[in-house]
Structures are given as C-alpha cells and as structure tokens.
Length: 170
Image 1 (cartoon, one colour):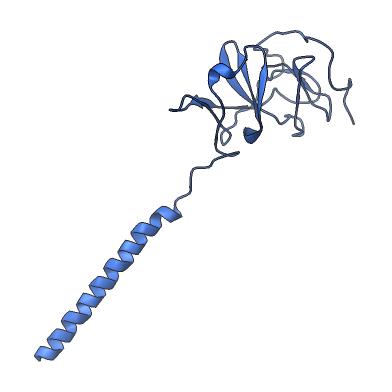
Image 2 (cartoon, one colour):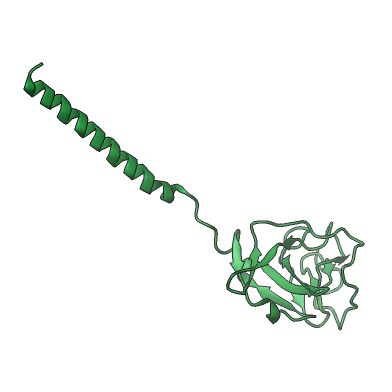
C-alpha cells in the first residue's frame, strides 16, 4: 500500500473513532433527560407542614395532596378526600367533627372510619414521612384502602349537628 492510502485509512479510522466518541458522549448526557423526574404535587410526594402543627382533635386540609391530615391516637394520618363509594370529595364538617359526603350521605369519623352510608369501607390513606427539612410529606402516589366497616380507631361522638342533610341526595 502506498503512504497516501495508509494515511487515508488512518484518517478515516480516526474520524470513525471521533464520531463514535461524540455519539457516546451525546448518549451519556442525554440519558439523564430520558429518566423520569420525581413527581411533585398530586401523584407524588407533597410537602405539607411541620407535624407539630396538626391539632390533636382537628383536621388540616392539604389541597395540593387532595388529602386531610389528622392525629389518630397520637400518630399523624393522611386521609384521601375522595369518598370510597363513588369518589365524591368529602368535606370535614366542623360542627359535627366528622367527614360527611354530600353526594350520598356517607359519614366517616375524624380518623376516616366508616360510620354510616353506602361506602364500602373507611376513607383511603396515604403514607406520610418527615423529610430532612422537618416537614411532613404525603406520598399521594401510594394509597392504601381504608378500614373495613365496624372497625373504629377512635370512638368520638359527634360534637354538634351534621352539615349535610340526613340521607344525602339520590
């Protein structure tokens, strides 16, 4: 082979190696873009407030998590705001200290335990954890079924009149 052909083969090989290195570097840096980002907001971990801010006998609504925070036997519990009957949003009634579904009249106590109505179980729950920043996080990407009817974690009587009409609507 002539010197010119050797040089051409060498330069061709170097261009191929260089192109391969550029492609590998591009794939390496693009890999991070292809990875899913950690979910923030509903469907992921939602940052809330310091655990000591949650009252012993009250309920705190966390709109971003579509959940409520309450204390049950000293532990913080995150309850889904959806009724386990047909998924209506269940507000907390301050006068009765109970969750009352305006759609079909299901009633849950402050712990989310089923008390009355057509729902098949208590309010569903989300796991919680305390972050490095000292705040409570609700993992809305992981839900567990609420307690079966008949099981009560707390036995608190209604503190006043109900907010929803007896029996609900249709």
